[in-house]
Length: 215
Image (tube, rainbow, N blue to C red; front, side, top):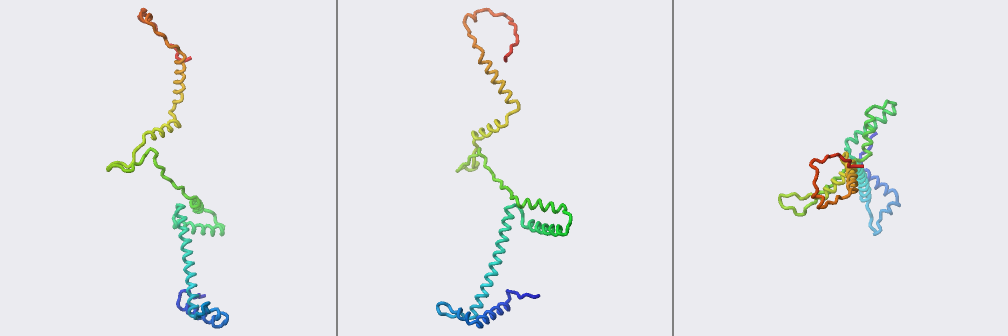
């Protein structure tokens, strides 16, 4: 069955003739062809308006299709996949549905399709570049120099937080021992030295015995 083309001149002429016959056959529509100002609209003008309206609708449908295609491509771009891969996945999905209707066994390709569909549904997380807090920009750097400078105090604070969160192995044990020695030293009395004690004779070779520093 052959359908007439809507863009040919023959069809436009037929459309104009049919609209003119339709207007001439109905007296009610002939009265409607008068404008409020009293001017008459010819049959050719009416057919031209109908023809232009048809072409306007055709252009609107084409623009609507183009806009939907652009929206689909933008969505694929932000989801991290290309439109070519989307088309291939669509073809694979259709073939998969046909194979399921025929009762075929699911293969490895079908599993790959499911994985790729999940990748499309989950958009990629945007990685934001966080600037270094230790870097301070310079508004007017001298020629030949860098446009920033390092802040040693801020860098020390960052390193100190890292050291506190990740101590050296055995550091806590060493600090406990240090505080215990400090407490022991504070309990001892400070020796009082007199001049008479300095004048006393001392033994030539005093015997040394080890003492316990901790209780």
